[in-house]
Length: 395
Image 1: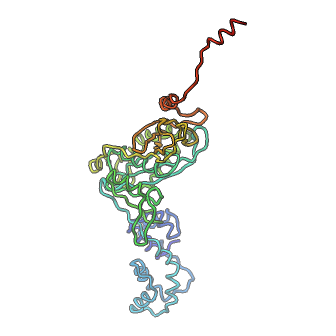
Image 2 (image 1 turned 90 degrees about the horizontal axis):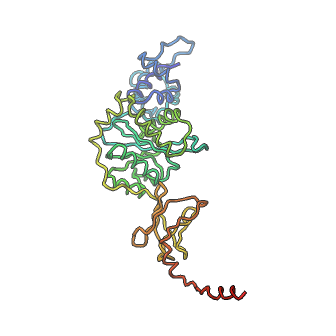
Image 3 (image 1 turned 30 degrees about the vertical axis):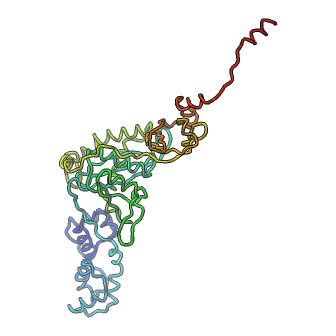
């Protein structure tokens, strides 16, 4: 049962913008109890008990007020209430404060609304589902605009840097523009380290993406997920809505097709619980504040190098692919796009070959023109068949 001190704490946290769930966890009760206390406007009526009254009882409200103001030093509080007539000892005061000290660590989460076009929050979610008839852990990138709460979601096989950047780019293209800031979690694809002085060392690839699209990268403080709370809730929304409607998929492409349809038919037309407006309608007010997309799309391909064998083939992901014969023995750069396109570049950066990645059992990737020079270089001895004809006629 709530006491007066619990009620004061509930009121203080609620005034700071804390959610009912967070308040309930801190006070040690249910959300329903917190909701009733707020509706009632105070704690439940006190019941008479046989507990002996304390000299501190008349001063507990003053102590709670000082705690709410951030004063937790028992000696300071003791001096304050003693000046107001308290005649008890400091031990009673310390016993009263001690169970409340856990609340000191929990800073209230103040809900604030960002300006249109100012902020996007990015995060990943994971879920086990059926893809192609087999169980698969699907990763999905969720990117949410802070003002309108319109979001984009894209499923991928993993959460590496290339797929993280691809998820953001697809979100920008979905929105038709780029926000001023992008807030990310502390995954290595975006953040390499936090300095003791509060500085952030971003991944060079993420900085290149930010420069290309003109947004300012921002990182959440470690162990402070509330900074990105809007997107955290959208991850949960995707799990509890989309993945409850759909339980099996033919492929990741099929999953993403259904996600796009669900965004259009369900997520964009919902009335958001905070701003009480249809998300799509609120986005129309945000759209003009987004910066335009750059003319050239950022390349999210994997970048590696290979040594060309003497037979003019390179090894890539368990299979072999042909390159022009004049590159035998040379080192070439390769780019593997997320759609499975393989591009090969020479030392000057010139595109010299292009393939589609294929399973090894389907054979090597060969372009006949690549090996024309090798065939021409081969000297094959030829002889007339006349001698065989003479032997045959003599027999």
